[in-house]
Length: 317
Image (cartoon, rainbow, N blue to C red; front, side, top):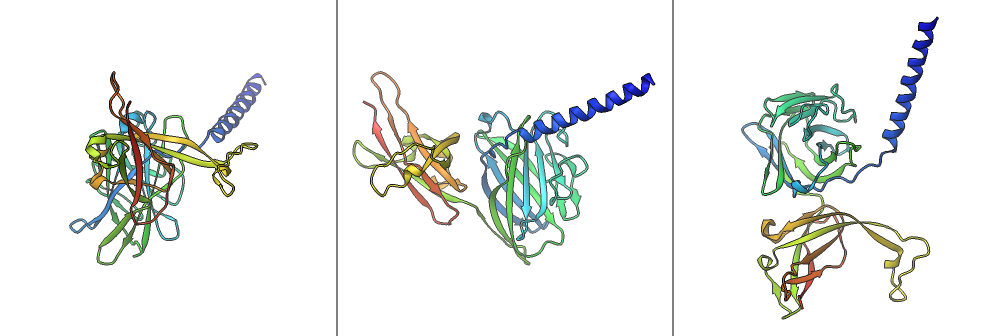
């Protein structure tokens, strides 16, 4: 009788802990996805693989990034092929430093039952019903950026348009929301036409001292600030003229990163849709020298043309 009471108590405690943990997990906020940049999607004729490459800029300043997931979705937005990279120091569910293949990419299950390890930097080819992740897949850090390259041999894929999505997770965070990184056309002859989902911007720096354009190598680096546009707080009214609508929203900073302009290919920065601002300050010394200035907050939309963004820089005085 005494043992039966102990068993009942243990069952009750387990149920209570399960409910508390479940409530804690559900209550954790969904974090913002770590900023990534699409590099390319190509086709290797020798292996018949689709190659997808991306980078995570300024990785040393991202302190809580333990997992990256890449999901390729078909035209119906259904997961076609999924890849995981464990950047943490424990199994989650694959060993640290390993790539993994998501067996059923249409499912959100990320337990060991649905993720098959491919070893560190794709040590061996790993297959699932919709294709194979080749051992040419790799990741590494260069110039402060994390580069990721995955090689996927499709199996019975339709010849249509596919979307590349990514999301990330930290040690104690739920996974972020999926972000659409790029799209590509998969054709019968293997040719792939790919493009980032977003827009490229061209920063143009105007010197207030002589009203001329400053070369990027004179500016050096900038801070790229991302904002979330939200409805203005109740009772707040900032109206600059009768038809001004800016007061209807407020802009809340969600991310900030430093960009070296010398590392921007052709002087362009690729951004996913959203609201941004470019800030520069290089004022140093006594007497002060350098420049400072910032752009207006601008919106990036998913279009193919290049957006010119002017930043007027004032000399230090």
